[in-house]
Amino acid sequence: MTDRHLSPVRTRTVIFKLFGSVGLVSDGRLLAIQGGRQRTLLATLLINSGKVVTKEQFFEELWEGRAPTKANNALQALITRLRRLLRATFGAEFARERLITLPTGYVLHADTDEIDAKLFERLVFLAHNDLATDPVRARDLLTEALDLWDGPVLEGVAGGPMCHSSVLHYEESRLAAIEDRFHACIVAGIQGGVISELKKMAMLYPWRERLAEMLMIALYRSGRQADALREYNIVRRRLVDELGMEPSAMLQERLHAILNHDPSLDLVPEVGRPSEAAG
Image (cartoon, rainbow, N blue to C red; front, side, top):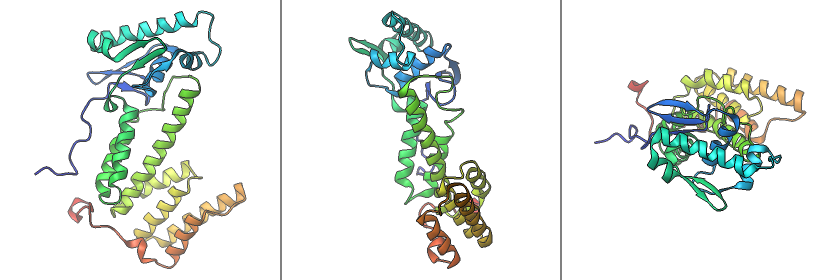
C-alpha cells in the first residue's frame, strides 16, 4: 500500500525558470538567457503561458512605453533568437509546437509543472486543501514548493508593469507559503523545530503579525509562556513607537488566550500527526 504522505506531486521536470535566473533547464542544468530584453521576453511569455501576448504588451514590457521606431523588427528578432534557443535545447518539434506566432502576437505553451512558478502555485493550492485535515502532508507540499526558489523572482529582468506585478505577486505568495508552513507544523504539534526559524522571519518581516502570532503559539505550546508574552510586548512596542497603533484584534486575542491558558491553544488534530518515534 502506498503511503499517501510519500506520494509524489511532481509529474514532470521543470524546464522553464522564473525564480532566480530566468532561463531553461536541460538535463538538470540551467541555461541562463543572455541579454536583458531576451530574459524579459521569455519571462513575459512564461507569466502568460498558454495565453496570447500582444505585440503592444511586449512593447510595454521590453521598452517600457519607449519602443524604438522599428519595434516590430526588434521583437521578431528576439522571438527568432528564442525559437532558435528552444530548438537547440529541446529539439525542432518542441520549438515548433510550443512557441506559436499569431497575427496579434505570440504564445508559449507549457504545462503547469514545467514552469517553476506555476508548479509552486499548484503545490501551494494542494497544501491548502490538506492543511486542516493532514497538516504533515501540507507541510511537505509547502516545503517542496518553497524548495523551488533559488533566487529572487525574475532575477535580471527589468520589464514593465506585467513583470513588476508578477514579482510582487510571487514574493507575497512566497511569504504566505512560509507562514502556512509554520502554521502546518504548529497544527501538527511539531512546533519546537520551527521556533528559531520563526524568530528569524519575525525579525525580517516585523509588520507581518501572523508571524508574531505563530511564534507566540509555538513558544506557548513548548512550555515557554513568558517568552510568548515577551514576543507580544516586542511587537506591540514596535507598532506603538513606529506606527502609533496597537496590535490587531487577532494578536490581542492570542495574548488573552495565552494569559488564560485557553485549552484551544493545546489542541493538536490526530489526523496527519507524526508519531513520537518520528521525532
